[in-house]
Amino acid sequence: MVAVAQHPNIKMYTYSEVEAVNGYIGNFTVTIRQKAKYVDWDKCNGCGTCETKCPTKKLKSEFDLGLGNRTAIYKAFPQAVPNKPVIDAENCRKLKNGKCGVCEKICPTQAINFDDKDELITENVGAIVMATGFDLFDWTQTYGEYGYGKFPDVITGLQFERLVNASGPTGGKIKRPSDGKTPQSVAFIKCVGSRDDTKGKTYCSRACCMYTAKHSLQVLEKIPGGEAYVFYMDVRTAGKNYEEFYQRSLNAGAKYIRGRVSKIYPRGDRLVLKSEDTLLGMPIEVEADLVVLATAMEPARGAEEIAKLVGFSTDKDGFFQEAHPKLQPVETFTGGVYLAGACQGPKDIPDTVAQASGAAVKVAMLFSKPELSTQPMVSEVDVSKCSGCEFCVPICPYQAISMKQVEERGPKGPITRQAAAVNEGLCQGCGACISACRSGALNLKGFTDEQILAEVDALCL
Image 1 (spheres, one colour):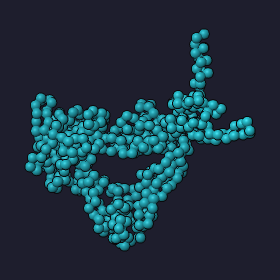
Image 2 (cartoon, helix red, strand yellow):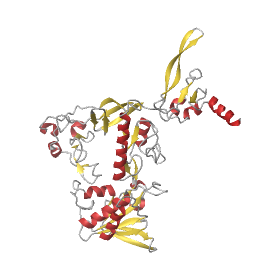
Image 3 (cartoon, one colour):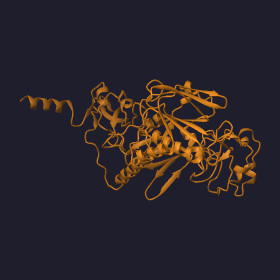
Image 4 (tube, one colour):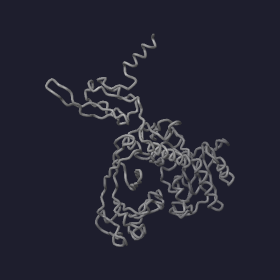
């Protein structure tokens, strides 16, 4: 989803993607692809009749992470804004082979439009807030000891979250995906993909310890006589009242076992977890009806591409790079582009809300000024030396250099040629272009060769 904010109006583009971003702070031009929804939301009242009558009913729901089903015409999730459906073109019988069209026939407002097409929209904005979120680490590709995803009763923490949610596929009841039975014993494994130098990510995903404590408590509260086993490396509860909540899960009866699970395999209709209790110094086996993996948080798919599109960098793990981890945690090196939430690194909800509020305030501060102050130490071009080779254009990480036409006096009159031009609103003064310039036409204001030599001469006197 893309939200484009303009003063005094706010426009919301849902079910859309960013195609291109040009310009600089206070003057961005954003090209948005509004995807075809095949439903006219101006006419649709969200009654849901089309969803109940659609004959294609057994498609896996992306929001329920495959635990529930949806129809070919569906709402992205129960609390979607606006709460109106779209048609899945890849699975709609009418769009695939021209047959069906039930939703069009029964729609009381004639909102179905099978001729809908993608639309490109251009908006001018003053600032951009990146809030692309995160994806879960795909443990099925690397963790063979946990079954590579072959056991239906080994699920992720996010799937368990959908099971216990009242609007989830089971109406809030904890049931095994394999047979729909209520599990009496649930095992939780932390750090699946996190803090793993060999097969996963080196960093801690931060939120896993607390949501696992919540999930274990929900098992004990929702299942009479239920058991909850938590396998962990360390328990990290760095937050207000976090330690107290962890102690609450312990007091409720959750059994915490310090040790990594080395293998999961079936025994009858149950799953066996082989591990070691490092505090007791002995191997153990635990039988469970359901296993929940606390998988690592990683950057959202396509995050690196959209960072290049907007014009800023990512860190070694693929998360968006902030300008300074302590002094500028919501800003990027590109002016006017701010970060909010887990796109900058793993976070829980309170930290995400705090950073989003900080980004909103930064945007408000930016718009409150009639003029913008720019960085004085930026690159400049000596047009007489520039050969127009364009080598500096791809070197600039902020897309601040472009080519322009310049006129010069030639032996037979004026001639036109290409030369580099620096956009001072985008340039951050990193100096990458200066070191790459073959003709020496680029200089950093305040740090030209002549100025540096003059400083050296002054120091030597």
